[in-house]
Length: 348
Image 1 (cartoon, rainbow, N blue to C red):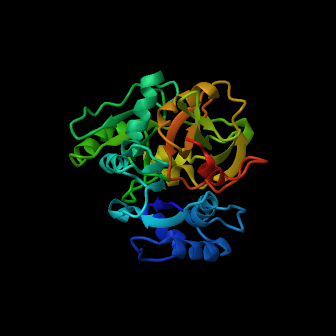
Image 2: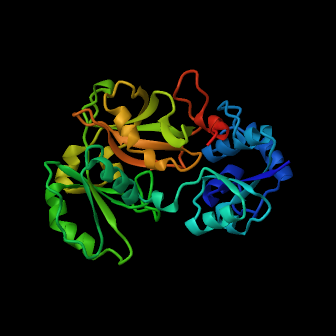
Image 3: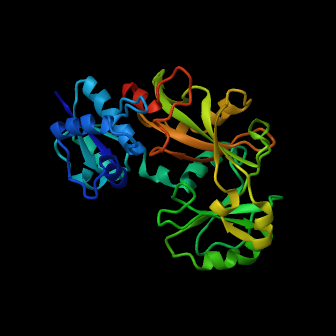
């Protein structure tokens, strides 16, 4: 039997195993024992569901599904992956692989599942690919600033802007600094200072804050949709397609009065805590065109979640995608398994 190594981001793997220190490798015997233990454990975190499944969530998980395909499955943290030499099959869906390491593995005859170029983790790069295809039709109006940029905002009637880092998730940068929401007048006054204080190697993204008026969510003024997508090979090409027609909706009610008084708030203070709903996107007239904007992600077998928002004009605006997501064991779609259980069977 061939060995397949699942490589996972260190923090995710530590959470999945419920340990503070990781080993460089967990061999197939250890991995099977961990699966038996973690599958039936209650209240485990989502990385554990991805690897070991969950009886509670009715998810099988990658270890079980790859074992059923005839692999001896081992585990490795991302930090030790470059030194791993005991397999020619790797699943890297839940980690980042440098371009040089990826090429070295290909030269050795290895097969990698779940690979995307490292550059795609940047929100700047994600937006650039979509902008090249259709300008700002499917994007919020935005601009990237570095230390030598002119402190000029794009011309826009928007009443609020988000200032965020190029890499981050859940409304914070990798070092934990929260995204902020600014009124236009306050940001015009302070943009020069923000730019001046940037380290030479860092950039910030300033993006219009899109308000909504969603009749399917109590006319909430900020509703973010998170939908699952996957890749499939068809006629010699790798295509990106949505997983079913359902998505998760994060419904927020913004504290506009507080923002107008303060001029700037952390994004969490402005939007508050979400309500969670399930929605459908098959009624969006431009959704097929929107999906085509994501075609550059058709590099290999992957699953990912994409966040988008639908303003009053009805045209989706792409916010970001995440290959190392936090919802792949959730079931939005009646009659379909969780996308994590479908992923190992993709023939890409």
